[in-house]
Image 1 (cartoon, helix red, strand yellow):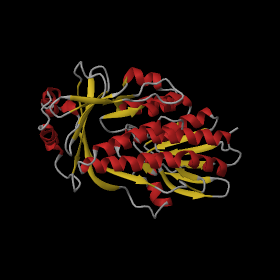
Image 2 (cartoon, helix red, strand yellow):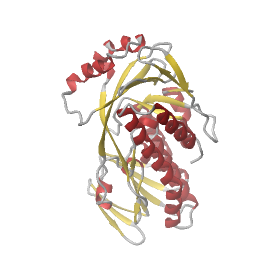
Image 3 (cartoon, one colour):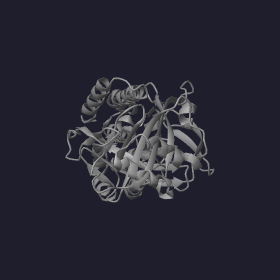
Length: 376
């Protein structure tokens, strides 16, 4: 029997949904509030690592992922002119036979997890958030934006990188800081010969593609920018096309015209990271996911570590004899893993921006991948 019987999850993103689904499996009653009335994640494609596929398998949605996304093994490496220079293997994860990685449209992954959340019996309220939290010795009293109230044994805050819960409970923590690099993403038709991720390396601009379905792939381009980009969205397609101009590989050159189509759904995001020192709880409120551990995409593990944290939290709540014991075990299993992803991703980002030592970049990537395939 779980150490708690009634839990509130704040935020219906990937980590909040993962925690809620797994807590329901442990027999815990879960309410979830999501401020977005449409409950839809934004963004283009998302690269999913093998460890993240293992986490989705644990939740029970891997089969659906394979139907609506794309899985593969390995990453092909090319020069900007199209000369193949090698590959990055994606080793099998421990404890699972899932492929080494994959890709999917971010909104599609959101729908898969949302359907699973509802199917699990979580009581979901969209267009709703909290306005006040009052902690007591044995429970947490929460007032909601619709005027209702509720009492819970535990509150799980998964309200994202700009979390108001973190600002409330961890006022000493600075908001995420821009790190000097931005990432462009676009959705494009998939040429028949793009069957797994492909990256073009050279200079401070890195480009790559990843299949997200039988018909489409998503393009990602990282570039160093000293200041956050602040220009009209209308010029984004041309800016991205200009970034790809030095890449003479016909595969990329053929796609530049597609960037001007509305279907390309171009997205630009300045990169930032955040690592809140553990413990991540204040009393009976615990923060997970991007609220406390937000990373850049260099290890394709941002969504993954958040989903994993939701799984681990539910496991520890199910087996602990006391709430503090569950918190202690949760932090023991999550802190080093999340810290490694964030710090190593930041190092990879620095090397790319400075056009630095490729050997060091390869070493960090290899060591990180081997650590991530280990059990959570």
